[in-house]
Amino acid sequence: MFSFHEARQKVIEVVGKLAAQSRLSAEATSLGRALGRVLASEVVADRDYPPFDRSTRDGFAVRSEDVAPPEVPATLEVIGEVKAGDDLRGLAKLPMNGQCVQVMTGAAVPLQADAVVMNEHVRISDAYSPARLAQPGALVGGVIEVIQSATRGQNIVPRGSEARAGQKLLSAGQRLGYAELALAAQVGAAKVDVFARPRVALLSTGDEVVAVDAQPGPFEIRNSNCISLGAQVELAGGEPVVLGNARDRVEELRRMIEEGLKADILVLSGGVSMGKYDLVETVLRELGTEFHFDAVAIRPGRPAVFGACRGKPVFGLPGNPVSTMVTFELLVVPAIDLLSGTQVRPLALFRAKLAKPVKQKAALTHFLPACLTWESGEAAVEELLWQGSGDIVALAGANCFLVVRESRLEMAAGDWCEVLPRRGMM
Ligand code: AMP
Ligand code: MG
Image (cartoon, rainbow, N blue to C red; front, side):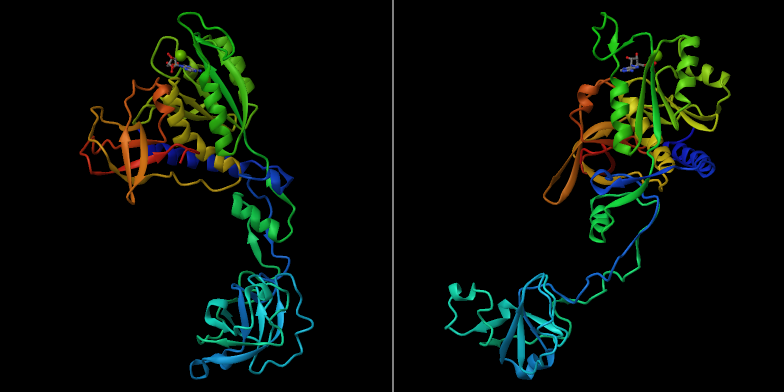
């Protein structure tokens, strides 16, 4: 039986090949609607960034030689003032010998200057009251005293040091987060080309499953998996196509699976265990599915199956809600990444200290609903009480899964352990 890592690798290998064979379609999207989408063409710098030598401080633009160590304190005449957005035309030709220009944060620094001395390192004569200083140009024609020496380049970001005009800033295949969107906005790419989101068909199965807005009979349950799967698909960057529920009948399953195979990925829940009415594998096989695994050494989620049918990845996830959620995160998310035209995001496993001991019996890797807190500079994680893989009540109070590896089923309080965040919750 595959470990979860091996199962993931298998998904990545198989879907990677399928993705290489399919042509992803692209569409133009405004930046306001592009969060989480994957770029289909590159974004380049329209000009140098910064476009001018930019001051990072409120202060005075000087020639560093005028305020080198032997010169300070140095008295300099103020010959101009530049605030953010001002152009330098009037100042460009003035000589700057023993002189300076008052500049604000974000303002262009005159070319004659090579350093900015911040306000905190300058003394101004008593004649300048705070009220007078608030006036535009109040210091021009007066003098200041620089009390700390400055070095070349100090408090200046040189023109073009972040990016050169024409330089590639974002590549096709990059996912757009807030920083990438800001970068596209900065260079004027108001619309960007993005790949179409992969359509993920969601089909739950089970005679006991009724629609969320239906009144269940005493032994029936509402279809929560279609809701959680839809949400997980959206969080992962796919487009959910909710097909609803198929009863445990071969005919009905076949019809709905065929419908699901029109999407880019098919995800089923339920019907993959060993029971008499677990028919999903049988029907998938009949339709020509090539299976790559039919179990993973994890709990919850052990009966998960994965294969390819008619060039489409197909996942049969166990129906117990927490199993469905865990196996989706481990196995389906990388398939969505690959069919989105981007690289697989690494599984965000990280270390935390166990708040309480844990002990598991089954020789599997366990994913237990848990709560991670961050106190006194250290991540601490605590397993929550739960009733097993049907217990959504417990999971809804968890922000992560505590991962207990098969190789170390018992751990003491204070031990380092692994944690998998619940996507979007921390
Ligand atoms: P199965 O994997 O088909 O054996 O299903 C296991 C259990 O998961 C069932 O007995 C139900 O309690 C639960 N279950 C199955 N499908 C769903 C669903 N769509 N929504 C919520 N719970 C489900
Ligand atoms: Mg079932």
